[in-house]
Length: 188
Image (cartoon, rainbow, N blue to C red):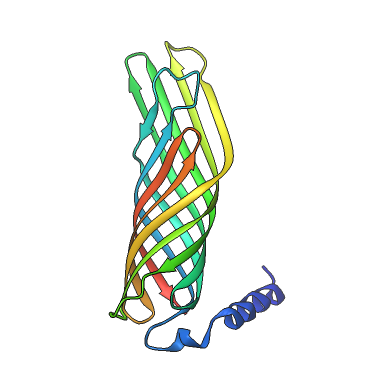
């Protein structure tokens, strides 16, 4: 990234941040990361005799904007992780990730350090599955789809830093992909 691009991005972030972001109850631009337990499901793979449900460790990166106290928007990258398993002569591996955009709504609470929120949006979800039986060549499924995304969480703010506990899911044709995470956010 050259200096001109970095300057433009930095200036845009400052312009997009509301003046309320500097108040005791920071609103405005925020970034963060989280880690937690994800669920990878697939029941739409015809070559796999049973549905697959794996629970690997997942992680995410997010950036958002909260220009008014009750509403905001968020962009996210979620990695659901990967998991392998075997049963007898067969083995399975699943992995997935998503890029999502959310509209976020916050409950009006009397405690300025606490937020309870819900979010809805769309996610571009990519799932990879492979199945091997009896030592034969593995059969794979790679799917990418745009699906409904949803989530809910609670956030405790300590000035600029905040901790969030959040559940989010993506409704795909082969089963829901989800992440239950502990997140760290920084409000600007």
